[in-house]
Length: 376
Ligand code: SF4
Image (cartoon, rainbow, N blue to C red; front, top):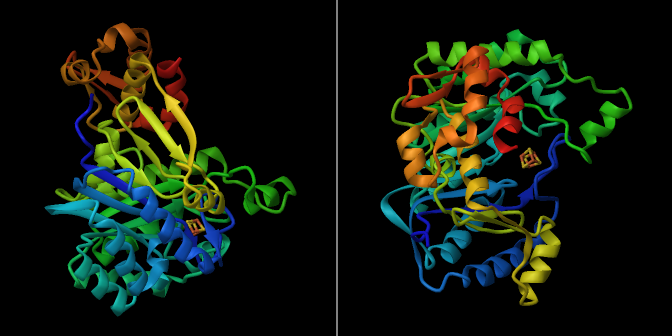
């Protein structure tokens, strides 16, 4: 039996506009649903018989900042009787640059938000337009400046491999982010998801994905540019100035248990992942009708959980250390994946000093292709 979770995720599924590449759980232009969402969230929180004491709380979406200052105050009024924050808790809010007004910043300060993850994607007007974003470079700059001045830790989400984006664009985006003084950068490559407007346009030949060699060059430019600027590359997609790693995401990657609330949100008890219904309206209707709103249940065997622990561990630059891995999972790393480790080391994709296995830069570049070796 696991200890009670010290981490919680709350999904806020509202956006002003659905970006053409996005397949997340959200509704755009449906603010009429906000009251019913709050009502359903209140019911869902009752699942906790006793309040949870949290080290980290992450408000993601969708766009939690779309609730505005008053909506955020309502949200915290709902959450905090059940989700109690440690004195030094890390509280992250995902925000759209357009929402970062002085009033929102003041509300975040009052509510105990410590970290704002800004869905910037780029600081280049052409790239933002290509990504169907509703903000411009000046909005990003203004938002970062306001947040840093108010004392928040700021993460900048940066997208690579956007339609028409060049290597020079990516380098300029990263340099601009660094110059703005953000403490954390997450770099993601655009993915073409089924059912999105982008994927339909790609199928019609109207949008052309970046060449794989360019994608790889962009990722390498991110590693080189950000590490040269003093950031640690601590997970495949994540870079932090020393002392500014995201504690909430580290809990995920340590496979610690976490709670989750809201549509499409997945909670984890160390072995089983339970995901709420991914349709916002269905989740609201089910929860308000007295259902538990569960969509999927993924119950792993102990060995499957151990193998997943290897994958998330290897995505981190610290890699997987044999003794703690065995203590946490009950499995010997070498019994599970010795042949794969041998192949990776021989191919220059990993290093193994007998204590710890880590992916090399070459391994990180092809990491997604390695996981089938681990997961079987
Ligand atoms: S703002 Fe973020 S969550 Fe909302 S549609 Fe765009 S990418 Fe998706």
